[in-house]
Image 1 (cartoon, rainbow, N blue to C red):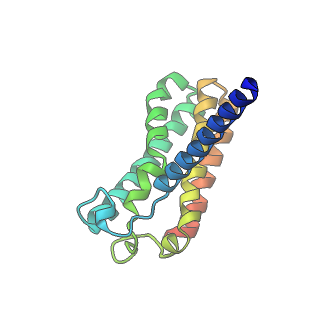
Image 2 (image 1 turned 60 degrees about the horizontal axis):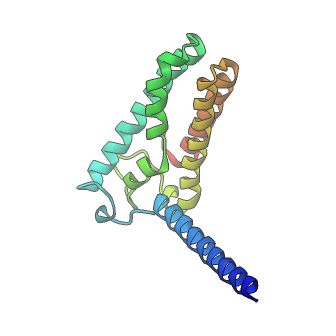
Length: 170
């Protein structure tokens, strides 16, 4: 009888732990893809600042990718690329960029299309896709598998292009 009581207690504790973990994961996911409705929902002082920041950061990311392509594809220098790969992995994320996409910041001075906010979950999923593809690139570079790194670069580029086609005015 004591074994049965102990089993019931342990399985109850396990069930509660699993439920709390699921709630925590759900909350983390919601936070990562949270749509900032106003400037107050973001780390920016103004909508204009958010637009300028995201444009500058995305251009910097593009330059970083060009440098990495040169390091990994042309020079096959994974060690030399390591600091830039770490920077790419840190910056090419939902958490880094999504707060700058304050709802409605698609007007004058912005290349963003209104579809970003109409299709927020899909837009956020694009950054998640980018994160996964960057992780594959980093893994290939760490293994010094330059063929895989070249393929991973193509995948990263396709991820960027598909988002640009859907959500950016040219």
